[in-house]
Image (cartoon, protein in one colour):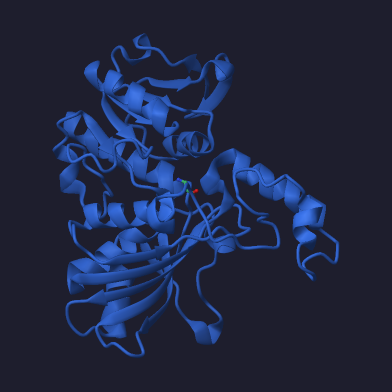
Length: 348
Ligand code: 2RA
């Protein structure tokens, strides 16, 4: 009998992409149950070419469910994922609630698929979209060269902050389009007014050096996630990681610059070979021809795109890279679906 799948949070930014992916991938599922908060109950959403009615989150909704994908806020996942697991479902959770729990594997199928089998709480965590946007490329380089230190700057799309983030950018762009704004201090801020949505500053015509909430010593939660999650996924618990997360006026596709230092000297030629052949990675790196990945081209695609591969000028053991990936696909929904497919393969 093909396994039953529940999608919890089916109407959100990630849930919407997940339904598209489930419709595009090989159809390995029996029933697909769509679950959301009470305000979405009764809505009909298309999955696998059929309209499916959204039902409310309740204990009973997990009856007979084999795999439950959660794309909901942390506190909702923290409450409901253990309930679904207690009902016998394997939960794949895309919130931050369980990622650093030592009894919950944090899985990227191209990097550490074996960890998905050991899940004492019945929960598998999906990494944050910023970590996921770089980790497949980084994992491939680590497997060959042995990573010793990582310095990251992110250029994060507004859809990382959900539909409210996208709405905010679009509204702000409509207020500044066709104007001369962006030429004197505070003019963009005055045009946008209080309409900064989930961001602390205007994001149209701007970059905002902040994502997430405040943690100790001035770090943001997003920066801590990139550090902690990279360490866990790569199995390098003491890896030195420095991260600065920045929001940019891009709708979807996160970009990152990486300075990655390895155990021994590296060559660009070998790095390019690894990246060109690693599953889930596309090398797009020909600056002479003006070719590098950008969010505008990468959005809507599955791979991690890598360009600007250079050896560090002052350190023959380090590489500089520019990485770009769709934060809603590999950064969230696609990785969740891939994990669910790994689990389903165990069941068949
Ligand atoms: C962001 N990574 O881009 C976050 C969302 N999980 O805001």
